[in-house]
Image (tube, rainbow, N blue to C red; front, side, top):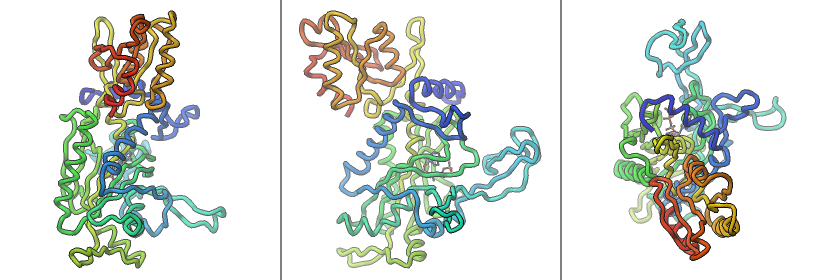
Length: 435
Ligand code: ATP
């Protein structure tokens, strides 16, 4: 997708709806602000991205283990973390049209929508508050977590004592986070409910800068391994006035969306800020004893924090292409086979000579290992195009030659080229191509 093309964004949103990637939440009631639902293809893509992140960040590593903490946490967590006091955005209202804006995103001093006068800046806390317990009067205020990181910090000792890890090591987690954003928007880029894929890496103080460099590289490699266009991803260092309350040094991995360069993932050196604050507020000793060096310290933390929904959007934006083929335009989602929702479409060329039965048998065999799709309806060209638009990287077609030698064609979404393979080779071939 080319930069700065708002129309393209509109076309992508409509493709997402048409093909069952993303729907507006509660659409039959007019929708609800900045909430989105993932449809049949969207949920597959999201699961695949999540799984691929987990494989790279936890499964394949000896020094990272997983966690799945509750969304609701003790309210003191958010006092200790600084969120009650400091997780705010500066808010202004337009006195005329009543629209709300983030003061740090405005360029002038009047309303960008109607030119009206703006109120003074107020600090607005982004945490969603709710009550826990059946009786509202007796209930205590509790928050929906605004980041998954704190669930990892408060479990630091539990994981340390149960996993036989030694510093340096990390804890990975994927889960929902909630922020009452003042200006959500750009489709699923900024929403009020979203999923984060976070990894917190605990290191010895003094080694933190090296590890920060290491994780910056590692995370860039991950995006490259997803086939994201390299020229569209960059690292931006936070200046002093951009640094969050907990960070000593911070970088954003940014992507060039049609609406500009924006943060895709944050990589932060959170120092010992969080653990020290939890020591103070909980009075629990969260220090680590290094038995080779015979010393005790509170570890520093390097965080890699990516948005799952935002990564999904990035993959879609990056993969979306409209190309001229002959007289028509081919809409194609060039998603990496690693994460594509459907790995292969399986088609009988025509509805006769036993082709549907052979294709059905191939489908039944392959679906045990891959998400595949059987399609018998319409001209073969139309069936290929439907799968191109859905992002399916391979098409397997049973034709008259199949009846003679048990081979099928494999069509490649990106090149539209074709090869022939034995039916018995298909599983191995797909494994190789989608790994
Ligand atoms: P911003 O300054 O843009 O609000 P942030 O710096 O507060 O973002 P982080 O707290 O570093 O963001 O969050 C880590 C990651 O979580 C982001 O890089 C992004 O991918 C994702 N994320 C954060 N807020 C949202 C949101 N409202 N909607 C979707 N994803 C989000």
